[in-house]
Image (cartoon, rainbow, N blue to C red; front, top):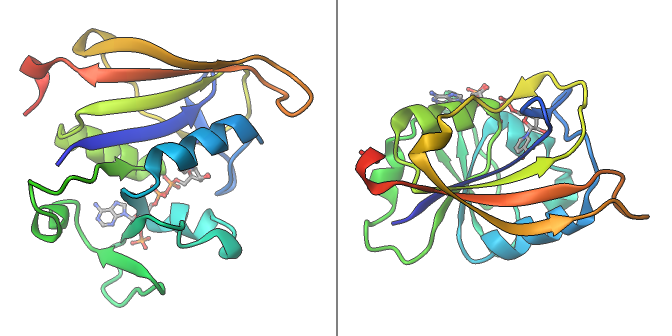
Length: 173
Ligand SMILES: NC(=O)c1ccc[n+]([C@@H]2O[C@H](COP(=O)([O-])OP(=O)(O)OC[C@H]3O[C@@H](n4cnc5c(N)ncnc54)[C@H](OP(=O)(O)O)[C@@H]3O)[C@@H](O)[C@H]2O)c1
């Protein structure tokens, strides 16, 4: 099964503040939805709880929540207590992609586990005052391809570029 990390970050790798996003970029939200529909989305418990109640679980996707709390439950979601449980839950032959959708702790865990095939990163061309960050990574480990650009306009107070990073095969576990 393919594993793809998807994130939006500012120029300082900031991804969130006060358990919320720091921008409203409809074209990026649309891109996120279209990209992940029909697939599996794996998220940290804090990220799940930051999604407004009316939008969670994320529709038409299998929602998986990672928590250390063994009695945690959320309607319509699969709960796991370690990243490794994904291997028991999903078959290698599953045609869906496992999307790692954050937040900061979960991105860090997934990068350390070195099982990411691809990262789709929305680079927001502004600086915000984040309290949660995406970890630094070695650019030379990835093939880089721009897949979407958005200029500032009435609906977008910041411009952004979406870049796909594909792990160079010799560097994946
Ligand atoms: N810009 C983006 O693309 C993006 C995407 C997603 C989220 N965000 C932002 O990121 C922020 C949230 O990120 P965060 O780092 O605070 O929290 P998080 O990664 O969403 O969730 C952290 C929680 O995950 C669980 N967890 C972490 N490591 C674990 C492990 N090894 N085993 C089992 N469970 C584990 C724990 O849950 P328990 O405490 O329940 O045990 C922990 O409190 C928010 O501001 C959100 O808006 C931004």
